[in-house]
Image 1 (cartoon, one colour):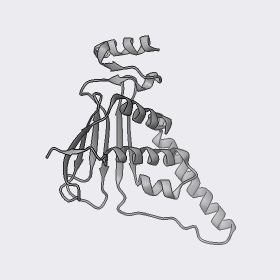
Image 2 (cartoon, rainbow, N blue to C red):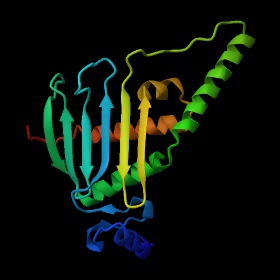
Image 3 (cartoon, rainbow, N blue to C red):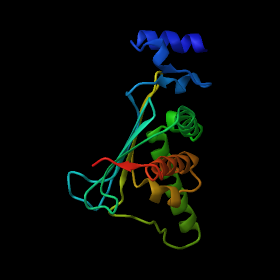
Image 4 (tube, one colour):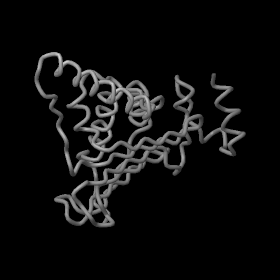
Length: 193
């Protein structure tokens, strides 16, 4: 498995010494300043260009966090993850299904759940009720590994996780987002600007 990762790294032009080999070959990533994970939250109620907090994690463990000027923690921050911490984070995200997440399948699950709720309500002779959040945030998670490029954009993720607890893909994606957001609130973040 390590040989395959080294060959893939060489084909991608990454020096072999700069590739982190993981137990799961899909988690192999460069060990340099290449960005391996980004996260951005676009706040639904904000009409400004800088519409929410963001995070970048580099293969060498550097963390860059940005909070817009109107937020309590406004500014740019940096910290560093140990190699084991970065590997554990990527492994945890993979375990939560982020690398395999299929947005169309998840949306189809929501539509099916809504249809089932309408049918149950009709059988019980009551109107179906649904929660709608007009200013929900949009979450964007991007992962750039040696063998995986993944971008997930989901509007109203936290709300959908509460509304559709029976859909594991959405519930797990929300848990992954929560784990990423925890990195943004580390105690060792130092303000850089």
